Length: 252
Length: 284
Image 1: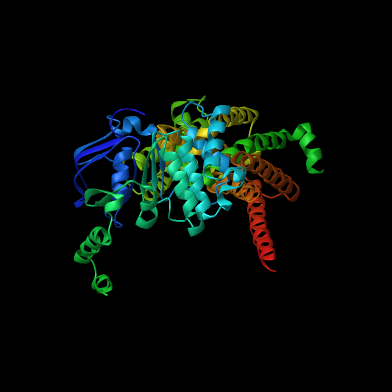
Image 2: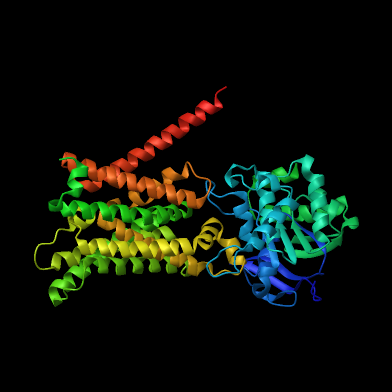
C-alpha cells in the first residue's frame, strides 16, 4: 500500500448555495485504517464522501487521496453508493453487475477472462457466489447491497468506501458482515458511513463524527454522552430552522 | 392475390422494397429501442423524431429553391436528428436546465421549422407523408440508404455493448471508474437519432415512439439479459412490421397505423397476460 495517508483533508469547508455543510474540517485517515463515518442526517456524511471521491470540490481547503487530487486517483477507491440509481426492471444478472467494477480497461468495453474471475471472487467474498446467475432485480434489498459491495471489491481498490452498508442487513447476518469487513481491512483501507453506531463500533478502530465539524474518536472512547453529543446537537440544529412539531417531538 | 404472392410479383416492386426496408430496420429498432427503454429516454426520442421534420423541410426547400437535386430529404432528416440529439444531450449535461423543458421546447421548435419551410417550398409537398409515414413510397435508393444506416447502428451497438450497458445501468459508478460517461451517452443519443430517421421512413414522425419502445417493452417481460431483450425486441418488431404490411395490403388500409396497432395490441396482451399469471401464481 502507498506510503502517503489514504485520505487527508485540510481546513475544508463546503456549502450548498448558502447552507454551510462542512466547516474547517481537518482529518487524516491513515493507509490501512478501518474507520466509520457517523453523524446525523444532513450532518455532512455524504458531502464528505463526495469530497473524497472528487465529485465536488471544497470551497476552501484541500482534499488529497494518497497525496493526489481525488479526481486523479478515484479509480483506487471502490465505492458502494447508498442509493444506486438504476431502473428496477433492468434486465441484468448479478455477475454482470459485479463485472462492471472492471469497466474501463478497454475502449470498446469487453471484459477479459481475468475480469470475470476477479468479479466472481468478489461475489464469493460477500457470500453471493451461488446467486451469480440470478436476475439482479429479483434480489432482496440486503442481497442487492452485498452485490453492490462485491462490485466495489471487483475494482480491486486501495480504499473501500461503503455508504450505509448496514441499512438492509438483518440481525442474523450482522456478525457475518463484521467478519467480512475485518477480513477486507487486512488488505485495504475501509471506510464505512453509517448511522448505526452499535454495529460499526463492533469492527472499527475509530469513528469519524461528522456534524458540520469533524471529530475523530477511538472506538473505546464512545460513550452514551458522546452519542448524545453527536446526535443531540444535530436535532437542535434542525429545531432552529424548522417547525414546532419537530421541536415538541425532540422535547418529549 | 395473397400478400406472399404480391411480394414476388415483379409489378409490385414497391411492396417488396417496403418489406425489405421494414425487415432491415427492425434489427436496429430492437437494439436501440432496448437502450431507450432501459435508460428511460422515450420522450427524448420523441423530441428527436419531431425535429426530423425541420430537417426534411429545410432539405426539400433547398432542393427546389437552389436546384440541389442530390439533396435527399432523408439527408436533412439525418442532420436534424443528430443535431437535436447533441443539443438535448449537451444542454441536459452542461446547462443544468430541466431536461423535460428542453425536450418539450425542441419538440415543437423542430416541427415549426419544418412546417414553415415546407409551406415555402414551391410545388405541392404533403407534410402528411412525413408525419404519418408511408412505407409503400420507398424507392430502391431509399432501401440502400436504410440498409447502410442499419449497418452503422448494428455495428456500433454491438461494439459498445458493455460500455452502453454500464452507462445505462449506473452512470455515476461508471463515471467514478474514470470512464468518459458523457461521450458514451452522446454516442448513444446519436445512434438513437439515426434509428429514429429509419423509423420516420417506416411509420412517420408521430408514431416513432411506439414502434421504438413497444417491442422492447414487450421483450423486457421475458428476458434476463440486455442482449436477449435486443434480440427478442428485433423479432417482435419484425413480426409487427410484417403483419402490419400484410394486413394493410390485404385490407387496403394505410400501413403505419396498422403496424402501430399490432405493436400496441401485442404490448397490451403481454401486460395483461403477465399480471394474470402473477395473480394466478400468488393465489394459493
